[in-house]
Amino acid sequence: MILFFIRTFNDVDHMVPIIYKLAQHSSRKIFVLCQNPFFEIADDYRLNFLKEKFSHVMIDYIYNSYLPTVMHRVIAFLICNRYIRKTSKEGLALLCRFKLKEFVMWCSFMVFLKFFYEWSYGRFVKKKYFAERWAERFLREMNATLLVFDHIDSKQYLTESLLKASKKIGIQTVGVPNGLPLFSDSSMINFDVYYREELKTNLDYLIVPHKVEANHRIRFGFNPEKLKIAGSARFCDEWEKILHKIVPSNQLPNHKLNGKLKVVYMERGLDRHGHYKGIIKDTLRKIGDLDFIYLIVKPHTRNNKLYYEDLPGHIDIAYDINSINLIRWSDVVMGTVSSILLEALIQDKVFIYPKFFNKDKMLFEEMGACLAVNSYDEIVTALRKIRSEPNCIPYSKENVGQFLANTVYGGLYGRDVLNDYVKLLHSLENKSI
Image 1 (cartoon, rainbow, N blue to C red):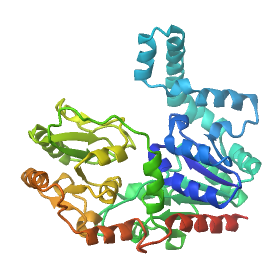
Image 2: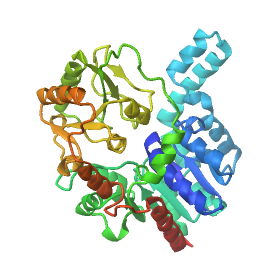
Image 3: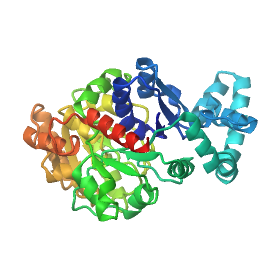
Image 4: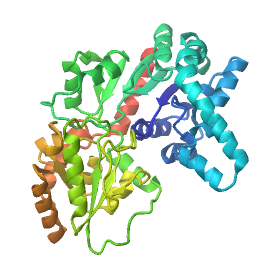
């Protein structure tokens, strides 16, 4: 049995297409187990799509999956109870609706939450009840034949126990992409990321989307024999067609537009802006002040927060709007490193790369698949031209096609990405067996 381990919005985004194709190929049970108790699997539209389409895909929290003792049952109940995942906004809503009993329960769980997750989980529960011995019994009970993670740090959740147990039993482990890195081969990538997520975690195999990403890892010491290139499951054409049908609709601005150019800025995932943070904030503020622009800023889905404050109120922050819907709504998409920028190219939107927002070197600029600008003045000039010539995309379709072939299809244009993932996973599963 193949087990998939999920934890956040992003790895679900990139793993669900693989699970979908695997489920199409076989009626054997597939387990998708969430390690992050704060991630609400019941509300995720991609996971719900899998559940509705395939009766043999089982989705649950890992804490519920193997309960050998009463204490395990108690811990699983506390960890997986929906109340602990309610936000403060939801708690306030309960109070405002005079649901006092539910509000008191929510407050009680918040107190428990602070104690349990800040002290008990890491120091006691994980080490005593979900350690290597539990993991070994769990894997044997599940009759596991392959463990599939994203590119994860071994210290997160139960990963370390699972990896140790899998090596003891002889079950292969593989990491699949939780994003689509777009840094060029000449970029100086943060070594610590690779050390924590790949070298230290020591997965048996790692699947990466394209050759440049493989080169980065080899440069930092990853064994090339353990690397497999298979393209991007998330952005391949087969999954894009499905995803665009199942994405929930969102309420998007349609008032006060008055013919304004609709611009979306896609934020990067982590606070690695450095001294560029002030430049980004000032530039966004000035773009938002332009009388012919309607600007929306989309925080990265990995953290769903901005790393600079006090943007003017007329600039919308799209915490709860799906990125696909935002890009559909937009005329122009701006951004620096997030893989969601590929959606702009796939949807034939104008993609502006403000290269003065960071020091990184990006593949889309290197391959001419964007409009790269070097200053705020150049952005304004570009936006004015796009408004006056709405059907003009200021870079060639050939460049975009070549860029997508290299990144999404791993250098092989027309590659059957999802089937290649299935073949890879089956071959690794056979090594375990």
